[in-house]
Length: 227
Image 1 (cartoon, rainbow, N blue to C red):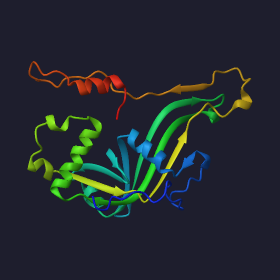
Image 2: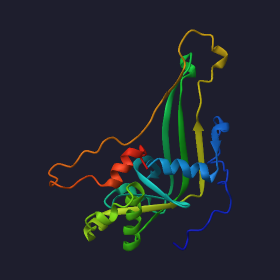
Image 3: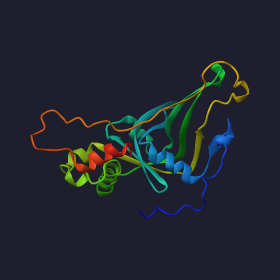
Image 4: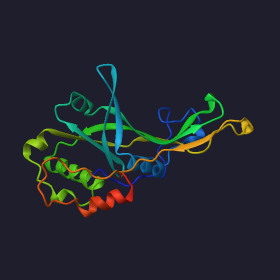
């Protein structure tokens, strides 16, 4: 698209809105770190204010360069209201429970990214269809061309929004409990890792005989990755 352009710097600007105040050593404005978290977390939460009240809605997101996309029902009042509105898109991943020697020192290992910008409706029919194709291909490479083509009514019933990332912050905790000075206290302490991965596929009811799981999906499950 014409307004897609390379970033001017390796970091997003640090502003009063995006500056990490609590445990700033865990924060980063590096584009590479923000993008890595967005790319690893399809599920996001979009926050905005409608008629003076705050709302946060979950949806799937995908990133292309400096843009984040998400979609939903065209009938959604949240998506209709979000057009041309400042929004915050947040992705977070839990990597483990951190068990300290006191309740105070219990924590979690995590990766999170908050990105800020203005939501824009993708209203061109071909551009919207292409954005949805990229969503499917991002999650399941090679699947789009095997699907029944999207109907005009389906396209009309689906809204796609995109947001150029103006500001962004990543925050990460990764490590053992922070109570090494209490190492002699007689209680187990450490990390319980959390792993998210695809499980064996479950075929839809009523599927005709002879339709096997595509090799690409079998490979995806075997890889253990979600995205």
